[in-house]
Image 1: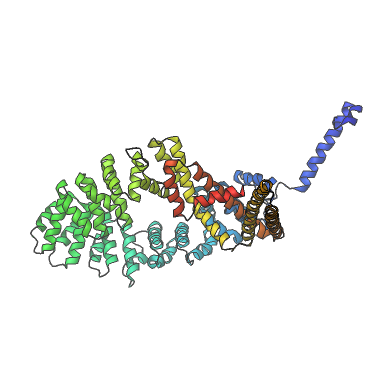
Image 2: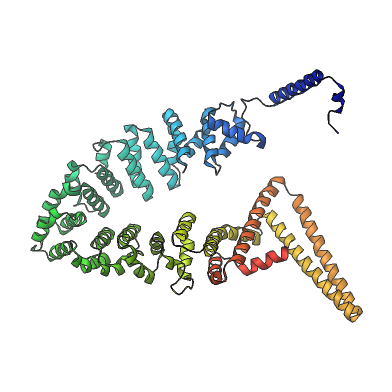
Length: 589
């Protein structure tokens, strides 16, 4: 029946007037409930409109009651929501939100951080105290962020503050302090110059590092003078600074290396820089040093000269094995440039060097050899070798030539690769769709298992009241079903034997099943009586746990038989027993 049957008896004009009246009433009702200038973040109906409006530039009437919602936006996993949070925080124009804006300026998303930095730049002095607070935290990454933002404020007055962090215990903080000074001021800044002579060796070494960033030839005498320092860090930073000067610093280096009146350590420092530059302009000096009165310099010069051709592979290999980090880097780099196959075993072994810089250099050198380096990496597989073989789309990482799965390589491939890189490799290497899907599922399971194991421990240890009751209820339900199943078996036995004792057993077993069911109901009631906040948190963790368990079980069940041993190794590495998971889920279902 038509909902307006009565209106059919009215005139068309009357109908139209009534419809208009209803529409106006609806508009009035909506406008009286929600003003378009109000910020409503706690109502799902309006949430998306609020966010989209903020992103489009709409203005809102913001009160302190809205701050929690804005903070939630700033912490959301979606960059657009975080950006909307920054925009709304700017509209609030309240220093209570300054710490949140400063945190947003360190966001990994460039749009979010840029928007927050723009706000800071509009009123730098207002934000300065909040930024300074970052420098006093115990978290090195936040101190790094504070230094970065402080340098963004500009002004020579920040230089002394930045220099205070030249002796921070964290190398990342020291490096950021150095970079920040370099970006804020010029090489002649008096505070920077004073820091070169600091009684604190760490401060002085970072000051040399910073001055070296300018790569100004006029500073060459300063760096050469630091070669005589008793402190190894200062000497090293001075050497690196001379390396940055390139050929323009060679005249100073040649004079120092040839001066036999200087101590061995000082001359060696110059010679090491010359070795690093490998300039053809140094050949004459190196030939002269072959007749040096110090045998150590004669040997060093001979080694350096050997690096100019393929015949120097052996000398460079010895240099790599016996030298400090800087020299190992040079040796690996030169071996790659020479391009001799005899250098491959050493370059592959350098992929396991203790120094990250040496490892990176070894990877760059091996890239020069392209596929010619693959067999050597097959024989000495490492995480970095896997990266190189992935870059080259070498299918050996998945399958041996005989078609058998390469278990060891696959384990490294799955556990050390990012999702995007892994998908790209599988496509370029021509791996079958079915096998690729299994590998990608195992990669997901590898990461899922971490969180799953943590929640599983939380449940097992009974540290979460909600999860503890849920687990007890789940176990009782499973036991009740198993007991009920057993009672049916005993009842069936009675029908066959007609033995009253079998019937009694079935009754006892059925009673036990009911007892377990009742206990499970009681535990469910306890859960229902829990505090809502506690229950909501527990339910969220439980849902996550069950979803992960389902994912891990399905991944295990769908894994190709040939890859089951690999899957078991991956699960076991994270402390997960796939067989137990499968049995547990089967009983529950």
